[in-house]
Amino acid sequence: MNCIQEDRINELLNPSAPPGRLEVKEILARARKCEGLSLEETARLLYTEDDYELQELFSTARFVKDKVYGKRVVLFAPLYTSNACTNNCLYCAFRSENKNLNRRTLNTEDIVAQAREIEKQGHKRILLVCGEDQSQTHVAHINNAVKAIYECCDIRRINVNAAPMTVDDYRELKKSGIGTYQLFQETYHRETYKKMHPTGIKRDYDWRISAMDRAIEAGIDDLGIGALLGLYDYKYEVLAMLQHSDYLLNKYGIGPHTISVPRLRPAFGSLIQEAPYPISDMDFKKLVAVLRLAVPYTGIILSTRESEALRDELLSLGVSQISAGSKTGPGGYGHEEENAEQFSSSDHRSLSQMIKVICDSGYIPSFCTACYRRCRTGKDFMDLARHGDIHIFCQPNAILTFKENLLDYGTPENISQGEVVIQKALGEIENDRLKEATLEKLDLINKGQRDLYF
Image (cartoon, rainbow, N blue to C red; front, side, top):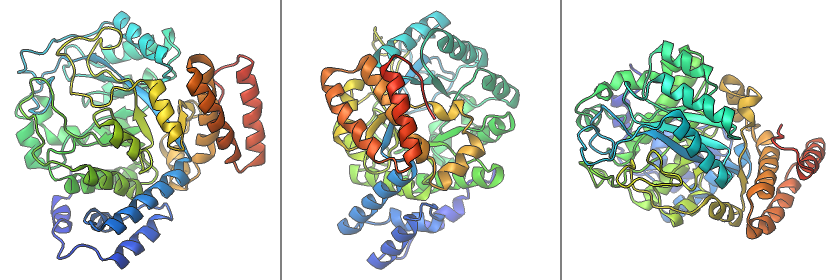
């Protein structure tokens, strides 16, 4: 695989001087066109350290996020089906040599029970996650789980984070009706990757990075990439993710729908408890903002690894999807297993608490799953998002799904605050016919109808 050009990245990581204020201003002006940034421009922004320039960067990221996606922030929860794994990743609690981890693989009945617990919170989106053990978490295990959840719960979209597969297995996975297929390279730096994955199938860097090619060949056109930040220089990882994104977009016309930015956290029984390449909170905010400008069409996902305060701040710096009320071990919802989680979470707030935070931040919580059922995926989604038009659907669908959540799950405080947010969001819909249609659907929701969308 030649999608990651390490020599080119290394050239850009050794600048003779940081960017000056005029250069930063020119790059940010181009970023406001929402057409993305080149690898060179991205690298220059990553070396910005001046406080004034950083504030301008953050302001631009906020502008681009709002212009492309509107004021909505999508909410979801992970569902871990298994922590069985044949790999031995040094940073992960699931590693095969961790003999103190309580191993568990949920059967279909247990998985449905977990999905129901997540649904009770008010979620409509799930990220299905499983350890990489092909004897237990094969494609049939995943497909059975996805189909059972759709049949037994009012979960409307299931994304899947699972090990690299063959083209034939990806074809089977597609049949279950998944949303996004998500896979992290962990680190794009080959030498570091080799050190971090001493045994198991995961040791093969090329097999992992080529997984998206096989998924696309199998017909899966909605993809999510990411890196575990802290294993190597974050600047390198950002530029590599951008190279990977550009490669997919140029070759297939399909860039990643999402990019995840997990930072390394302590994990029970892992061999690496502190990041080899620590990332300060300021640098983390900077890389999120830079990613937002570099790939404006891509959703940026933030997990509960980060602290409450930092997650709240990142809502306005480019993050467009966020987890809430998360458990990171199999069977964790309703009955938490001790020493079974993949990593330590920092934000333990409930979904209703996160709804309040999002509203306080000037955004609207969204439980939208419309694009997948309107076939706005792959190239169709890219065309809308790259031209900054996806917000036409995002804003009204956020309003409708938030209204439904308030009626079915809302606390008195959420309901009171949410109605104000909804009225404000309605006022931001510029198209009069779309606004009227949204009001009509809101009336139907008030009368008991559910799952209405554009």
